[in-house]
Length: 380
Image (cartoon, rainbow, N blue to C red; front, side, top):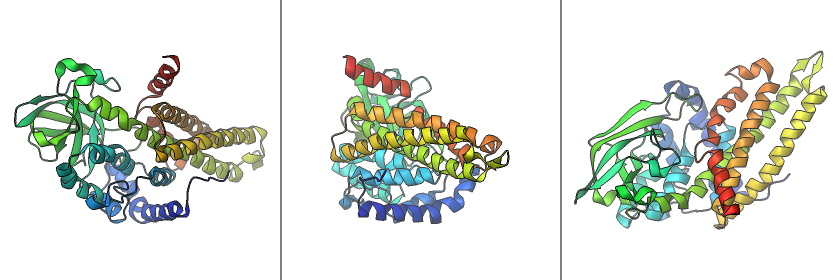
């Protein structure tokens, strides 16, 4: 079906993104995968190309365009290219809104220009060894010492954890407050007592540096409190819809790309003296995947438009995240099966898509958490 959500300006931006991927990402990606990290030069190149800070006001060096459809284009093209390691979506769509929406004027002028040029790479540190989606289980503390916060604790599974120059840390500022006693504390590179642990060895997205972070009596300036004291729970809930939409957009884009490459493969690959595409079972498999992708695409595009208009609610964002990522997982498995033994070879894109995409149903809130949010809204 012809998509109707993008204008000529969006498609021109898509062409820019594809050129960037061809010149600045794909020639280096295999080496990044071996290194377990992308180069800082890639971030600077993204800044020069105007791919960072799309929604950041122009006065701070950004694009000044809050239209989420540009972020959707970026997610779609990076997914199709099989290049999730350069985590521009995390930087732009997850952390960016915290800085622009909660930052003081002084904070914005201090952090946003570098955010937009790629000189300041960002991360958000929420997950802990004993606390994932359960914010009440967070143990990292930020003690008010008058002129500074004293930060202690550890975080794990932090995307951009090695490269990050600016880390938004979720910490307890009122220990007895539970989830309502959390604040966002910004820790900058070089802070004494801030240490990075292992660059974690994952089954997929090898070039995306994912690390352990440790905070041992880190003195953080009082002016690095982001938003309201004890306001992190509300701040986090406010921005989760956009995070989940970004993941959903990547999910359906991945499923569509897998369908495309698998359709091409079964036309070319022969078995029993004829192309696989001549076998009825193969045609039925492709028909089912294509139909599921088309139905999902229709819903996700509607969510993209609603989010761009500011009308998408948390429930529908959760539906989008759950459905699109579970579809991606199913399609990756079925397409790998249709490739046979070749699907298990890392040189084939379907194998990489299988391992890279497996995290999609986990981060940003697991499928089970998405169902809980949806069910609670219907049965409250």
